[in-house]
Image (cartoon, rainbow, N blue to C red; front, side, top):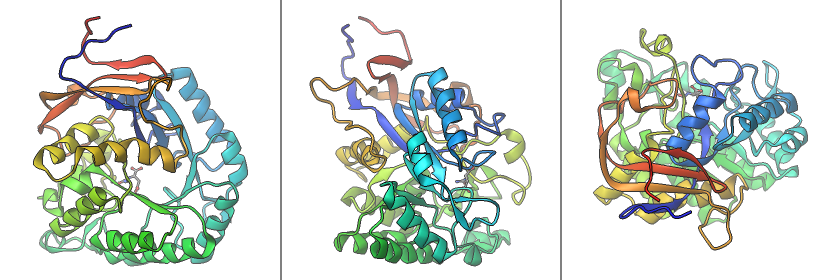
Length: 386
Ligand code: NCD
């Protein structure tokens, strides 16, 4: 089969380390079918699903059920991430060996934060027995004190409690010490502060096995986007300031931050179209990630090669997925992009069940034309000539 696409770019299929697919439990927001369709439309051939489902994915049973459903649906591959702890009090660790055997590629405290240092130490030790990376959400609840936006001029203006950078920096520094002590694989989810970047740079310079990801929204938006309580901009961790953006971009460009991850967090209108304090945090990302970040490349803020690595080879390595590089004899996990096509982000063009994104109405340049998983076309934007 010959695909003719003059001027298009052919890239390895994208890998997302951080998506919330909501199944089981909250299928009105997203389900595995719609989530995988959104992923394919965004150029992703592999996505890792966070465990904050209902019930939480803390068992072999939930992991297997998610994989069975994804298999039925087909298309983009789903890789479940298991929870670190079981139970509401969160002091016992999950059966990580079982989770691994069932197909989990990592464990995370998403949904059940691990703020207790002893539990984190045990989690790192146990996860390393199974070579599972521990993906840490990096939120110190004692320091966030229930805040729902960045602590700064905007939180002051709006009269909202602020979430200080140090709530992230303290957990990251604690965990880097624990990761060094245990020798475990530790991964920082959605880094949002300049302090995190500094800590990671220092840890990496000393050879620690740590990795990190950053989201498109933390690379592109500041807390100013919250404006007058715009719930589309309510997200965990919160949108920060220009100096954080600069540090995150620099960290991604120089490899201190390994991967870009979407933190695709679909919420229904009812969850967002309410008072700020009631609104759920999170925004969708699978279909917007690549075009939004191609904008950063066009501005000269990020080298294209780094963007591609951070969305393919780097996350694949962290989740121990097969090599994504395009080479003779490799399976065709590919994405075809028209780098010149301009389009305006509009709810009607999204495959996700939810449309909660502050980027609606933004015109972007670069569009996914086709996604292939193991040689099969799983998304195609217009009929191709062959
Ligand atoms: C996440 C979600 O909606 O699942 N939301 C988000 O803002 N990132 C959960 C979370 O991390 O709080």
